[in-house]
Picture: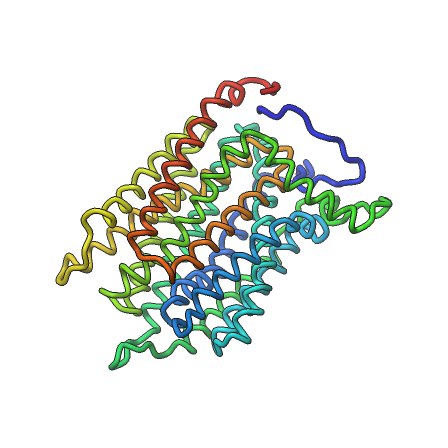
Length: 443
């Protein structure tokens, strides 16, 4: 699978391991269902709250700056996330990861610089471990399921990622429908009932955390660091840093990084600029819920469909190009012809944009996860650490830039990013497609 060689490290236990053969395929698909539903309950609350940050906490740009700090923290702690996941085990990591999201929602009950900033830093840490833990856990059960059922590994990885990301994408749909139902617009356009909304979100997150406790551990070997190893903690940190840096020496990862960065840019564009400059002026704060519900619905449908269609590098290439095309159309529309209008079209246009942006996001989520799992099967933890490192860095850039630049400038940045990432990705497919379809060999 285009993997040339791998250093043998006797003192380290592989983070991604096969599940014992005594387990049944049914148990593995059950864990996909549990993981997907738990993430839905947690992120329907966080996603909807994040969509409101730039408008509800607009005073002093508190919402935008706190999100920027969050994703800078996320990027930094992604360097160490795989070490923490190794120490805790992937199941414990995703459970611990929910605490940061819970505290972030709680801080919004009294949003000040003294509550939002510290919690944003902590959330950056917990977000890094929950996503590395999720990627590791899902990849492990997919590989084991493929082995036990004699199915093609790429097909199973695509299917499992498709189900997970489809359920995950529903968080935008469900969470924003709740927002639309709870929030009421006051006489002067201010939003009421935000306290009730955040309490509902806290209840949802609590249920999601409880559900995660029912996940089955992958393997006891994964849950402990080699106790008889004489390697110090500092040495382990250095080793983990090397595991993050090493993938960057691989030409395949270097060619994927622009696409990973773009996936973060387009998400942040929706959260920061689309909601603030396209939806809010026409539909208002309460209308954000409806627009983002449309975004989430198309995101979920596309995630499921893209996952089912994924079978290898060739299918990933076609699907990614299709999703990028839809998003490029929206950016060109915003740059060249779009202007806010009244009446029915004034409502339809933002919703149409939400649908096409959701399609692109669903494609990138499923295909990037499948691509990394297929190309870096012997270094999955390092690959997923790269995914979140570059995604979160790109998201932080948008949140810090958003208050300072116009919508038109941001759209130009997005168009340049999508072109660079597609050229790099297509070059990757030309370099590795032959090796991907043949027995392992050196590139």
